Image 1 (cartoon, rainbow, N blue to C red):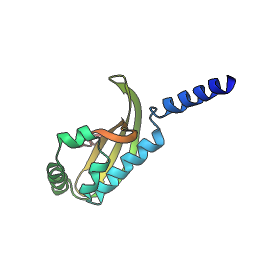
Image 2: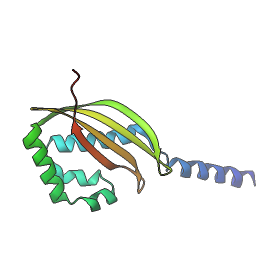
Image 3: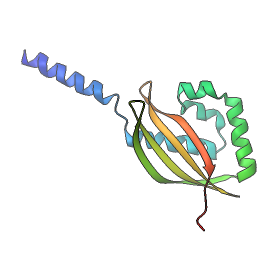
Image 4: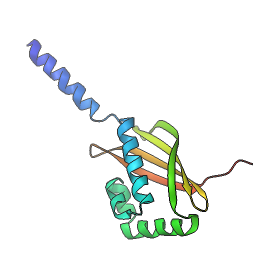
Length: 135
């Protein structure tokens, strides 16, 4: 009877851990998508976005968006993590990574909202803005 109880507890703990976001894994996803964008491998970005995100933006429109950003801001040269925030949105744990993106013409700020989707750490939202320079 004790073995069944301990086995049940172990299974429960392992199952709960499957729904807990892992900051290191989430960061790997964030940096993988930023590297794909930097390398202009836009086709690969779909594997890092959530299914809902991919449904809301076609690969063709995403490519066009990234190409226009490159045309305006210049080539993305490097990215640097500047902030990490763990929060809850709609009872769901999310990690927001903020990166400074150094481009040829202007610096950008990318906010990547990462959560667990289908057991994977995926980008749920991706916001790119101009990085405001201090006076």
